[in-house]
Image (cartoon, rainbow, N blue to C red; front, side):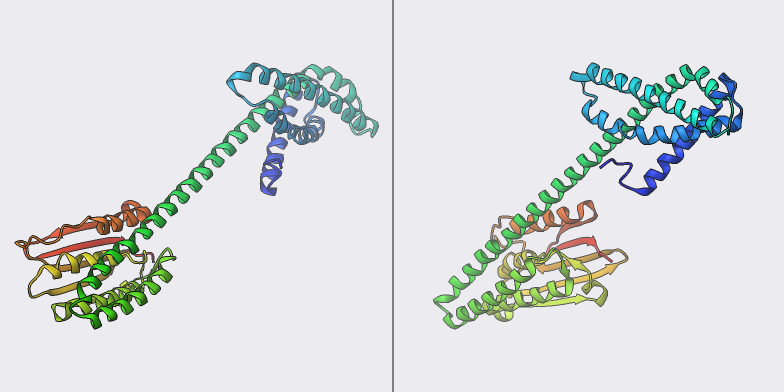
Length: 351
């Protein structure tokens, strides 16, 4: 469908522009031929509107003769031929319109005046068609640009969704690797606790798979998952592991990516509490500041302990997921201390 005919507002603006063109043509007739203003306007404005409708055909001429370097001369020749044909047809329509007005005895002698102005009308018809073609080439270029932007945006969205799916897919293998190591450590010495850990792990995975398919979840659900993860880890660590969660209602209502805290809690347990002889406390704090949600996860650490060498998958996963969702509006900071280790998240509150 013609882009101008696609919306009534565009068509109205288009016809208004041609009415204005009719006024300009009337001015030329007054200056170059013995026309009065009233008869010039009565003669030229309807002709301009008729030319505006017929000029819509330039859209298909432009599509058949695109402005490409390899066929530029042929396209220009096609446009010139179409302009001459359109000018001749407009001149014939002008002659018929002048004869009709003269026959109705509205403007006696208008036919003779039209014949005198015929060369001017033919030249204006050719020029107006070429201008109309230029307008259509511009519309086609704008449309092509918008289509290219739409396709680029669709590709960007598809690429981002594919990256997020890949990042979410990394979470469970990484978590299972750590959990299976914990179960393996308990099987021989504490089989009952190993069984409890398997049950808790199955329940946690069932719930995480449910929320993992969503793009975001309220922070309160994410904190509930963290609580469930702590209960699993406490089967192995017992009283050596404790935790505190501090989050106000405004923060709990903010949307976050599902399972964004899981890798950080795992790291806090594996590389923090597990390396402390007496264990320690993991502290999660969340607050909303204006349009920003801030979350921190802190754990104790023993700087003299050789510790476990991690792969860095968990922290990098969190960084990449937040960047994919929020770009530079999100930030992940790592704050190591002499006796503690803290990860700070900053992301839009979404409200």
